[in-house]
Image (cartoon, rainbow, N blue to C red; front, side):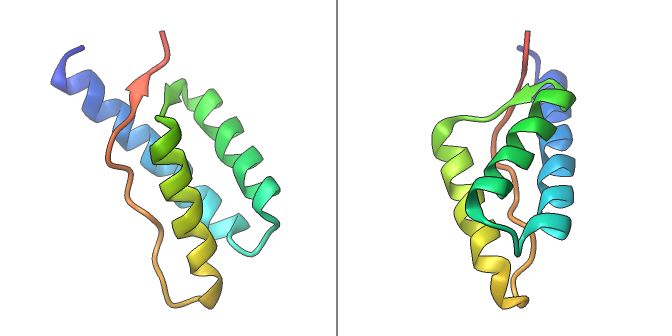
Length: 79
């Protein structure tokens, strides 16, 4: 995979995380996970299970309304 494709996948995943974080951060954990999965599928990108776990934990941490959206560290296009 080229660096450009990987960077595009990270940017697409970040947009999904930003949207889920801003609209769903106070929702139930299962709703947040479902919205994240749906958004990533629509964006045709995937993240590792470890990355997903970290992102979901950081979104959960936003419930104090002092934290910002988590940053996607790695993602790849769905083929």
